[in-house]
Length: 614
Image 1 (cartoon, rainbow, N blue to C red):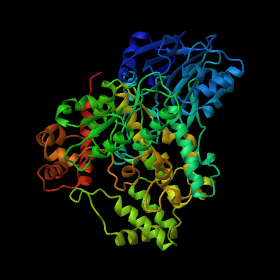
Image 2 (image 1 turned 60 degrees about the vertical axis):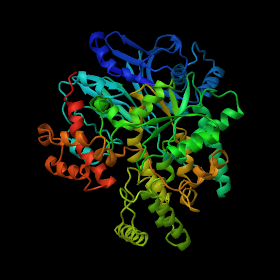
Image 3 (image 1 turned 45 degrees about the vertical axis):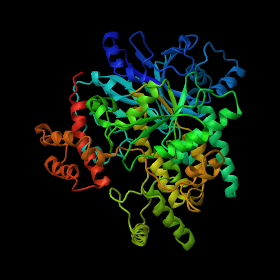
């Protein structure tokens, strides 16, 4: 797990090194820069996780020096691929997955990525053909940005490493669309800074003779599978896949742990880790490190549930009290490092992974991806109503699941009438069907998309195109700002293909969301967690902060002349009034406070990223 930077043609060391060092946080352990004649320069900032010796150093060349690679990510099944390559006559001088990647490319060419179970963004230079091969993992867990400036192709793990190569830093023509569609731009090539593009997930490409050619190597819809006929068999299959996904992700030469919220997904992950470690000595023995973000006195505090999990497993936990005043002075730096926009402050998440690193843990196995894939959000649950429309009992079940999943706080969160909610949803859905409108998705013309039920279609877009890509980007930044790698067993591509092939009733039903996860992992988890129905989510308790700890800061900032005159904020004077109402306690809506933050944050981004001196 690292930070990478490269240019074609080459860049002088004195220019290249400062740009690479903007990625220091991603790879604090060491760095490497290699140039080949005047053709290419590749740079790497290393976070050592597998093969901590110099043998794992990058940029890495193959035995005869023809190929050179910089790689950010992990190939979790590298041992299995290595065994296959050894049988074909390849030899190895390191125990790193990077060398396995190079040899896999030599053996199978550009199709090698189909062999990988992992997360990656890499660039491999072929000195014979003068061609750069680049690839990004199936779902975009690892970032990859690029730009073309005056005939030079530049790529990097973060936009900031490309800034020094731009003639000037200015906002993209799409900036205002992006700030108003925060969950929809990550899966596009659009970036906040003009001249920089995002390389798409599930794609590979080549850069040769001044031209970038890319192609899609992975579409989940091409990899749907036959699922067992009975639900009980489906549960067994899911359990088998999930345990193996965790097993592969427990491979590390450093200490591992987990960010534990007390919710179902992170609890399932650490419970699986405990089961694996207990029953097989070949996995990491140093895994019992749980880190819990705590928001005492707010509706977002789930620490009591996390404690139930660690008590059940017989391990300790580090509870991180998120006290904003202790870190708020770093907000500009955090925004610069985060470099994108989101609906909530990055502070709690950055603080959590900061604690992870300070306590000697470099890798966490976290529960990301399950909500989007298995219907953990309320709107996704509603979409199942269309599939259940001919069954009154299933319809009632889904509405009860929706109602019981609402946050218990009655002041900051809305609690709609279920009858009205159902009527509104169904009338809107029927109108769309009558007009022939398809589920919004880039892949809705794919033959296999049309075979998915309504619920699965909605989740497909959420997983591949809007919510999840945004969260993957966010958590990459939150963790890598602190030199921590996140691994996500729910996002093993075998699980994604399997779950996308399941009917809606395996994901939501019998009183619960994420039904198959609960039934598969119940033997290893405390019952209070497995069968808990309310969902909170990891966010900032923005109402409490605006009305208490950060009241003075918010009022001072929205009265700044530069804020009121900012071109990146829509109607700053109106926004000032709305934010003042929350600060003064005249409006306690969490949704409104979050909207205000979303509209306010471009001003913070402008100061921290756009106007930052290089």
